[in-house]
Image (tube, rainbow, N blue to C red; front, top):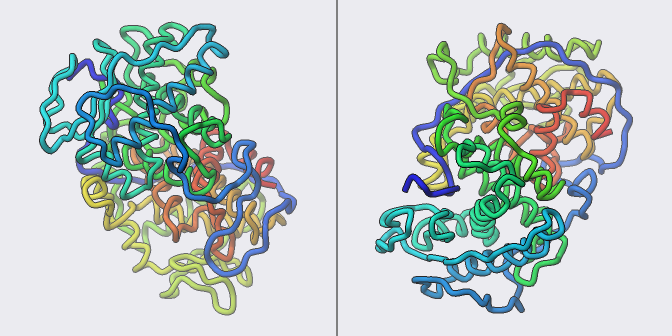
Length: 490
């Protein structure tokens, strides 16, 4: 199986978590620009479009009038998951038939073979080995084939994330076939590290999904709100475990890395994906082993002492704004007297404080159990950085209010997520009070994707209703610094 390219995910061992350090970052004053007024905690329309496309709401999946794919698939059984997978392959191949001549000056050659199997019972052979017990999907270069597990993997993804999840998996695997066809045009050689191949494949998948969202597909419909939310959640689940090295053979990337690559493809197209190489990926990849001194593997206990250290890191990070940072107080229920109520943490404008519920935050901060996520879709906690990010988001509300920025509309929520990302980047600098650890950014993304998240919420707890924008805002702050938070989100 060593020759398999682009299996669905890399390594899975129990995932633990981490925390953070900080240097100074500035925040310029912002003007109100768009959005809707805050109200009760919940969601609100996006602050703008989705990479130039309108925000849409409808059920994503196969079109009722989708044609039957004209593909030969070995061992298919006609199940719903096979139908979704085969349609995704046919659809993505149509996309590449259109795009490859336009963008790369060569014709796309269809896959030579396709294999459906059940990890529960089948032992079909490929030139990459037997699929017996293999809960995965993969591209096999020697026989130019794509294979997928219809028995365990695809049903699980469909049941948890909806019908677009299969398309994510198959579009990624077809991305590897595209790499082999493009070769040096995609910076692919025999010794190209797996992380480059995997990031490119996620990016190529993003380009395909943009095409679907533009309503060019004969098979699928994709809404830019709920449909893209399914995609983001699927990519989160199939991340590598915290502490994996990006240099390890088979590394796919953290959830932050994988969603980044997908969004690049969605926003900029396959030429940008093909330009990914070892040098530019190394400059921004977040996947890394735990530090030698990180004895708890990033797992910190939430108590008064660590909250005090967190407060200092936030003060240091935002001192460039030139306004007093809010105090962090524990009053039992994380609400404001006569003001906003967004437990487990609330920003109270009347006295410039962040009120927290320590007991609830401790529940949120429990270590991530990635094995449990994979098996049951649930981990008892999201990790300590998820809790820190919620507190940091309410602290950032105080900074924004201090400089005269809006705090009660969609832009305010996205600006807040962006500032949390900028703080996370500042906290990756060695030698500061707290230090960002392997897996922390994925904990923040996990929180962003949950219905109760405060990281991208306005002062009243309302957040934009599409995960693509929420993750993008965090990513922009982390990769581009706090200045983009003001310019991008008004």
